[in-house]
Length: 130
Image 1 (spheres, helix red, strand yellow):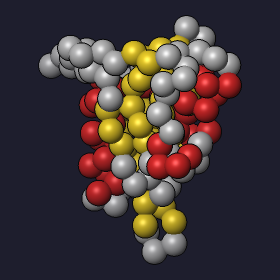
Image 2: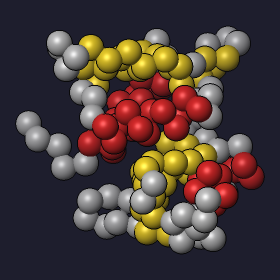
Image 3: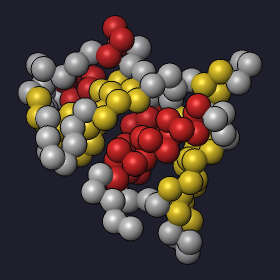
């Protein structure tokens, strides 16, 4: 089965695992997915990601606060293969007053909104996370 939007599939897997209070998510890794996960890790939304090259699968550990309350509250895919959403660096949204993160695909790689604004880089708005 081929996927037309692998990033949306990854976000849906994370959203479903978070709702079911699972410890980890298993998915097929790619450079783009791992770059999105790296941004989420840098901002403290998810834990460690282990990649198994032999099985061609990755395991992403989710973070929970006290009482098994998920650190990650929500994810929303902004751009899709059929309707790409491009933004300039001044148009990158500030998510929940700075508590969330916008993930942008720029010419210098996939970055969070704050880093893209600082470096004055626009690009495709992939998703927002809070």
